[in-house]
Length: 324
Length: 119
Image (cartoon, rainbow over all chains, first blue to last red; front, side):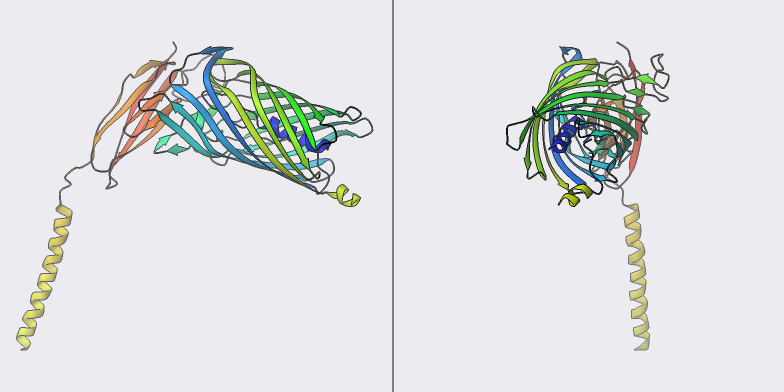
């Protein structure tokens, strides 16, 4: 049960919402479903996420922006996880924006609509501590973010705004850590996840800022049922994006280029979630993502809400097969 | 009989050659009633502050025109067709490029520079 809970907590964590310069939000690529799999075990997860953004924020206050009306996206993804050994797992994640759009208050109203593959992520996880007597687990991981395309997407012969482009168009890396403590007597689980992401510069000399997520989860099983309720508090820090090039006026703010003033910030979310397990093999999970605090650098569109559902199936590895 | 046959083939061949040459000549010399002409690419404002927008308009004549837009620099291009709106992202100089193509695959190119300043 522990692994299933971790699985969905982690899934939720990695599908966070960001509000970079004028974007309706990006699922962050990565594989933080850190619950380690046994050797030769295999896990497949499919998910869908919808996000809606509306209103502009500057610092922690609402501000006016009459140009952009709203932004939203529909995103579907697939994650595969395989146990190379009882301590090492390999993971891959791919995701596709069915639509990623922004609507503008033009006359007539206009919507920029992007679609396509997000960056894929390929990573390894290593289990440092796994003490079953005093239930505690610590797993770390790291991997590469790989863009499917480096060229920007154009629709109707117009290069789409960055906010509706489906990926960062650049390579990058992600590192993560998961620490959890189980209290079996009271059926409570505490989990701390930290994740750091860095993106390289794309072909247009644009670099998304570094990202650091810290997330604390509490999970409690509902009696003897197969349901688990989960509550997450998540903090996201995003550094400002950097752009360089011949046309950019140099500033002293960054050695690498000019910082994009309306990018990055600090956000806190609360996310209630419910998970239902079927026969310890199939899992289905629903969640909502609600911002409770935000501080944006410059004026940026803020996320209003998001929801997601996940379906997963685990296939037995070495240990489970032996038990059977 | 042989002479008539010779004249007949000579006539048919000559007509065929003449018609063929003539047709080609007509095709190549046929004037395009509405040739592509990309007159101008104009920005409402060529210098704006970071919180301003500016419209960019391509003026062209021709048949079956398509407008392709691209940006060298930062910011966003919103819209499609002959007019787009430029939304800046950072201070600096940005070049907006437009290619107009007609139904005969003829194309012309123009660009306009937008300077973005701090508020």
